[in-house]
Length: 115
Length: 110
Image (cartoon, rainbow over all chains, first blue to last red):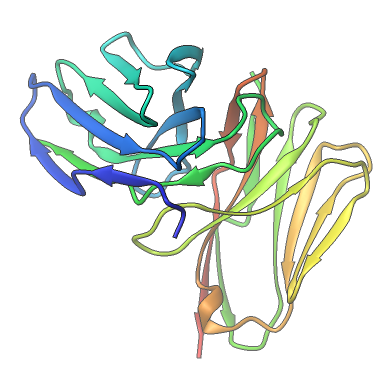
């Protein structure tokens, strides 16, 4: 077990709705990254938060937003859901923020289906 | 932009046979990571390679980083059914971000 938890495990939404996904990082891990993994694909980097500030972002539109809280929990919010947003959403926590510094520990993911 | 390609996309092997997956980058990498994702699971960190020509072993798994730091390989000796899953390499892009490869899905036939 990685000590990283995510909720909910599964979710069904309709197009145009908004969704909030939650992640609880390992205690002491200051960095959380969020990834989107479509079926049969590798994880795609959405953004990273370090000590409650966004410090890196992938090629995702502004309707993907996030928050990180002092208690090592974080959220991924997606507005105006589209069918293509259907995917497994993964959070990964690590001690450091810089690539190559630390191992990323992934949570079990939230599987989102948009109808 | 930087791309990370993995080959093959799929590999079916008989239990006991060896398996190798290759990861190729269009640019020189500072480091590379390897992950394993079981069916229905999440990626699990296996190893990080940093030095040119580096070779690391974990039991039956051998990881190699190319001399030019543009490619890497993962070799499994004598595969077992527990090795089933998708193997991803991940390469850094910029300061904070990793680009995951396309993955190699391994199926082991008993």
